[in-house]
Length: 237
Image (cartoon, rainbow, N blue to C red; front, top):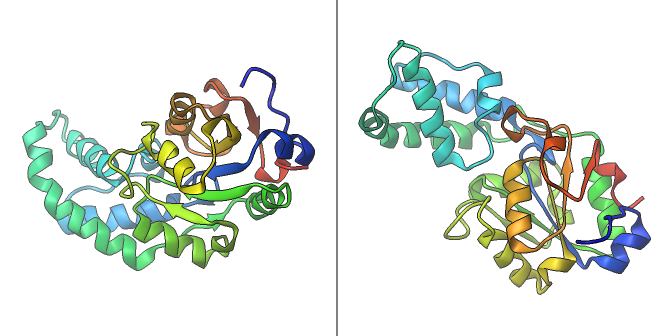
């Protein structure tokens, strides 16, 4: 958008029809869930564990990327870079184990960020239609939203397996706009990382980033966005 993006309710109502909201690192801090599921997976495979801080840098590009990145990291602890074939040989068992552990603990170690529910309520009060779009598998995203009391805010929920490609590709945003019946230029993307911002820019959506999320260990303010907020409660005020 050419003009600065104003976050007050009146400004949002005048310029936007809908908002697409990311999940992990934006609405819910799920690092504990990731660490627990990955820890169980690595134990099943007889591999060393991984520190939560190292997990945080790898979250955001979908489960497939997360598992391969974690396997590469723990195998490299031996002092020798693992071959791609070694990672791929372990991947099927890692995937099955991770899915099983994550399904069991989904939401157990997660917490809703302060201001997240208030921000969603403010967007709805401003007249915006809401969809949740995450790279997390939809089968995990929907129960998590339900468990944390956030599901009623959303008309639609899409996961990393809902479309042919994941963020930062613009396709998921474009397809979500189509599902909502809104134009990208009037659909706000709210996220925590460069994945969200890059997808939004390519799709033609304005984008707001929260400053407290994961973003691969980098400051969200270093990412090209229309605005940054320290709490989603700032939206629609």
